[in-house]
Each structure stands twice: as structure tokens, then as C-alpha cells.
Length: 250
Image (cartoon, rainbow, N blue to C red):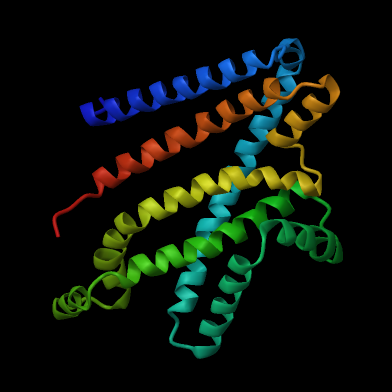
């Protein structure tokens, strides 16, 4: 059962969303906006398919981003200087350039050169690599925030490097990385809307097709916002639940 504070925050969020929705509706009523929901209802199956495509791409990209982020974090902490420099360069390159440019270059140049003609696969990998660069810094900050006394205590009881990470560092770092990781996962879901530039008909692209064919605007974008909230709000709630589960006294 959710706690009273969690329920209170949820009710306040619903009330705020309702107030904003009523304000928007009143504003458009004043300018005599004519609502036309018939094309949206008729386009429902395509809208739902686009939503499922977005979910599948986001889940696959999440897995890729976690693997890439963890690998880059390990590489940046490697004792070998060439590995450190390579991983640092990859992180700075991915974080320092726009995702749109990476999608265009990755799909139309790299994927074409490698003869990979699957936009879904390419988009999933490119999005996962982009978000993985940010996760690498989140993971690295969480690991490096563990005090040196923790490592010394692990060595004092006879732990080797692997055991130290497994039983001492990782359990504490996971809790510290959860808030940043959750925010990055939410950002990943929203960034998946850019995958339409390489021909993937995900949720946003389906809404654009709806609006262009029916000459509507809000009737497509309002369900779009709700569809994203259906995914991001439970993700944020589950992350807070994990934070409470991993809570400990320092």
C-alpha cells in the first residue's frame, strides 16, 4: 500500500494537472477553437501501435544504455591510460553533440557503410549509446562518492577487488545513482521521439501523420502527452520505491 505522503503527492499532481487542463480548455474556448475528436478515435489503432513501438524501442535502448554506461564507467576508472582516454573521448563526444546529429550520422553514414538496413535496431543502439554516456557519469559519480574508509575496511576483512565492489561499493552506489538514473530513463523515453528522422513510425510520428491528414492539432497532442505520462509516472514511482527499499543509515 502506498504511504500517506505518496498518496498526497499523487493527489496534488492530479489536481495540478486538472487545473492546467481546465485552463487550457478555457483559453481555447475563448478563441472559439472547434474540437474534432472523430479523426483521433478513428486513428486509434495506429496511435496504439505507435505507442507500443515507442515502448519497445525505449525498453531496448534502456538495456543498451545501462550496459554502455557501466562499460564506459569501468573504462574511465581503468588503470590503463589508453583505455581511460578512449572511454573519456567517447563520453565527451556523445554528450557534447546533439542526439539528432548522432542519429543522422549513425544511420545514414555508419549503418549504411556497415549495410545495416534495420532502422529499429539502429535507432535503439544509437539512442542507447547516447543515454549510456550520461549514465556513465552518473555511475562514476556514485562509485567515487563512496569514501576511502569503506575500501580500507573491506581490505581489512580480506576482501579482494571483486568482492569489495560486489559487497561494499555497488550496494551503496546503486542507491546514490538511482535518482539520476531515473531521470535519465525518463529523458530516454522522451528522446525516442527523435527516431522519426530515420524513418521509424513511433508515437510522435503517428501523431504528426494524424494531424496532417485530419487538420487537427490538440486532438492529437493531448493524447500524446497522456501516453507519455502513462509510462514516465509509474517509472518515477517505482524508482522512489527502490530508493526506500535500498535506504540505509550512514
